[in-house]
Length: 498
Image 1 (spheres, rainbow, N blue to C red):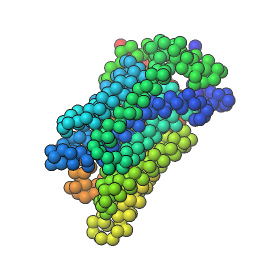
Image 2: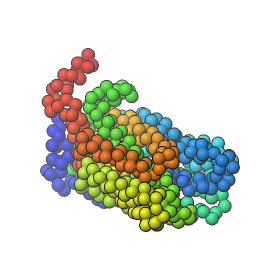
Image 3: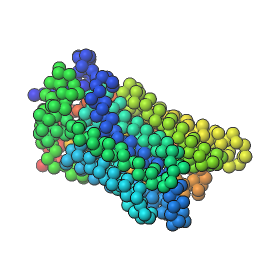
Image 4: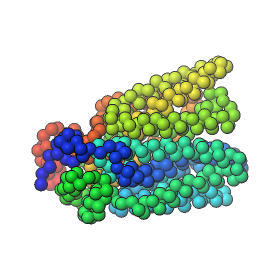
């Protein structure tokens, strides 16, 4: 059975033929529930990155050696990121071998164990071990949730649904600042802050037991009846038949291609290489354009801007985190309406302007006692979040979940997430030292330069994937690698295999 691209279920050609089969974001509560439960992984990820900044203030009070050592403080923060790098790298393999559901359950168990260890830590070293476990869980979840949501989503709302995972990340950061404020007066402050994070992991574990495996993964594993059962809850009868016919034909090809994919195959294949350049490159730029420095250090930036009181700095940071979550909601709407590429470009342009405002404010602040520049820094910070969160927040994760062919989706998703966490580690380990060495104004100018490079990267390399089915996206890479004539591709492929 041959299927033309125009008639692929979910493609724009198909939906023009059958407009009544088009799905909208709120039409099917089942798929929304599935995305929300999978997105709890994002909530854990966001909560953890946000909570540590507040908890560290109190950990220093409890442990003399942490108070005396910058190295220990940095290790407590970055050990979770180191764990996430390993978790993301292993998570891609776990996803492909055991499925998206089991990978999520595994991440929850590891995460809950880490939370218990941290809350009960008798010394900084057990705390660091707990941070490592939390990181492993977060890293695995950061690969699994976007892929699981993307594979269960109808293509016309896939961007919005994958972006709910990013909303959960920003929501988790907001929640962490609320928790930081709530526990400031409670005995054992930081133990509560860190221990509470085990609760969402347990909730996700229980809910996940009732959710199905990804239908595309089930097809690949030849478990067609289970897959059809899942799809029947997502699509109406007319579209269900087309989806099942298409996936049956598709999975047959995938199984033949999949038999023995290794890590280095990603770099051997021209089209997968260019897809990974886009997926990994965008996630690296997401980090290097400074989002996590702004989130980790927003209390510090607010203090540098001249607002000294701890409580006020935390409160202003809470507002920043709230704006971040609100911007992501806007992104969920725009990503399937304006498209991925336009959204990323307008986001990066705004981020560059905001960074210039921030840099200007800090240049002036250092040479003037005028309080107005302190406020200008806070305005720059708000503008930065306002532009970053709807575009460069959700777009890289959405693209990373949809640009790889089925047989590479786990392994390449894992590699892209690993790039993200390594970049995160580099940025969070160097930001304060660079700001200390050359000043915070020049540091923001460097980040602005990186943002301009990111803009050029998106213009040149990133394709528009709005509304495309997974298979239409594969065609983009094939055409980029081999031109529009598919025969050259098959001849070259045969040549490379012989």
